Length: 256
Image 1 (spheres, one colour):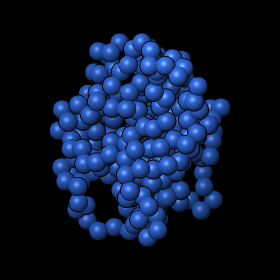
Image 2 (image 1 turned 45 degrees about the vertical axis):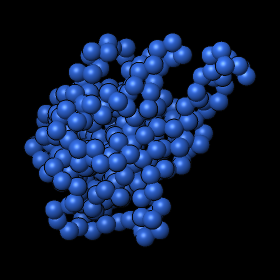
Image 3 (image 1 turned 90 degrees about the vertical axis):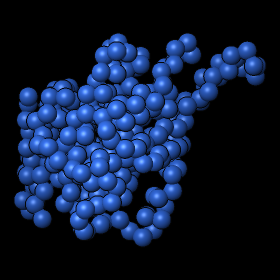
Image 4 (image 1 turned 135 degrees about the vertical axis):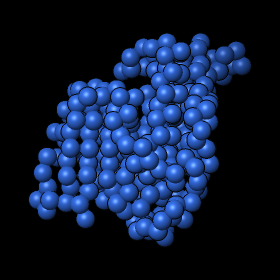
């Protein structure tokens, strides 16, 4: 089976607009939070919401009628003085775009490292909740049931475990990118929600984890990121090689 691994170096909207209508079976991604993280570009709340809404409208266009999405976001984000309801913002963007939210998966991060932000120690004065969980917003375009039969790659054991709405797995660590999710996260989404040979898209591809996992699971994949440095690293890493010995993967790189 020949599959295509395509990396597009572009702004998320420009990258998505380069894709054909109804061409994506599954979107798996973790969008930027833009709430004060030192590795993110500071943008206004209005600009961030505009990006989220425009992105979801493009999700609606590129997804097939039975296309699905799994979007990893925090419940909230911010400091002890300012809190942004990031999940709520993406929920609104999804619904406003005409997509349907079907369910949620809570990602229990067993090693998030957020263990010392106590706030007021042993006092009701100003305690802070320590975040050790995020969420996957799971949904679809026009209908949830797949319109065609395909080859699934998930085992019976994994199917039983992954259809429970709490997933416990450690956070990933990387010198390359400060906010990576573990390979296990996209692996579960891809095997649970798509067939072999389907096309997966990560419009905020970052370190390229989704691309690597989708390729290894014999899915076509499109990754988009505006950061040229990340795109170059992906091309140099195991997530994006230029050739394969058996010729089973076609690699495509575009700069828009």
